[in-house]
Length: 183
Image 1: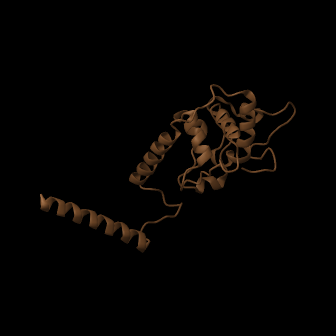
Image 2 (image 1 turned 45 degrees about the horizontal axis):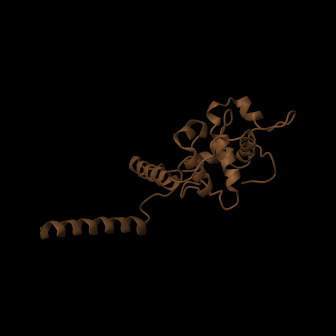
Image 3 (image 1 turned 90 degrees about the horizontal axis):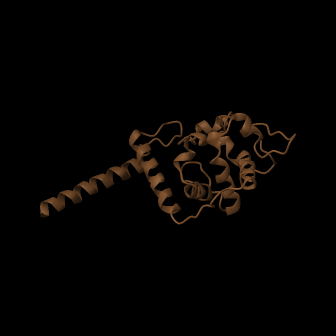
């Protein structure tokens, strides 16, 4: 039994030494142009998904989102989110493809998250992903508006996205902020 525990202790020490060697020698390539390994993608993705699910427990989403909430969320999305996440008929900005991990195209993935989880992500951001925390400078009410809007993205046509929330006769050029303020 003592030999077993000694073997475990040696294995842990060797793994720790290898980890420190990688850290202090710079052996691991941290360039955003070098993709993660399959194992790295799995570890980071699984950790993020489980962390968000755990922390979103207890967040109570509105029973339904009003048109006004979604309209305000659309304006904020156009100001701050579309550049990384794109929208129906609109690709993300070229520079967003240089982020690692690359931001997801929200119309394709928004259905994988609950309203509470989306709220938590927008409010708190995701470390080491370029997803900023909007909570420090955006009210919870505005964040719920963003959630209400992005939940509608999968069913929107490019034309619907283009005109959603705009007053008649008012257009919004894709990729252009609807106001001078960023998020």
